[in-house]
Structure formats: structure tokens, C-alpha cells
Length: 78
Image (cartoon, rainbow, N blue to C red; front, top):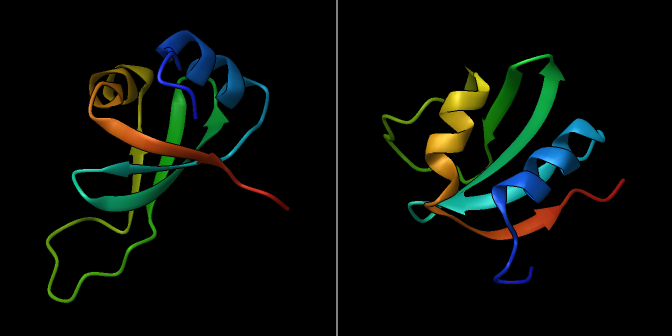
């Protein structure tokens, strides 16, 4: 994705129903909107003996706090 990808565009894409893959701290995740102010983050990269949650429900504030550290965005293709 373009380096100019902003949080506003990311948020709009999720509101439009897109599921987005991204890297966060060298781990691959999938995130999508479930309901108003309710987002699901799924762990894609399986790490042996990892303390990371496989599924996490987040609010928009949590997603916003993570956005600055996300990289390598991809849209899920059906």
C-alpha cells in the first residue's frame, strides 16, 4: 500500500466491509469490523508458545492506538 495510507482511509475501508491483513510487531493479523465500535483482530502467524491472543475484540480507540505501528497492509480477497 501507499505510504500515504491514513487512519481515515483505513477506518473508511473497514466501515465499507473490507477485511484487512497487516503486520504489527513482526506478526501477521487480520482485522475487520463486526458492529459499531467493535472490531475483531485475528492472529494469522502461528508462533510456538506465544503469549499472543489468537482472537481479540477491540474498540475503535484500541485500533487507533495500534495504527501507527501497523505495516504491510493487504485487503483480503474472496
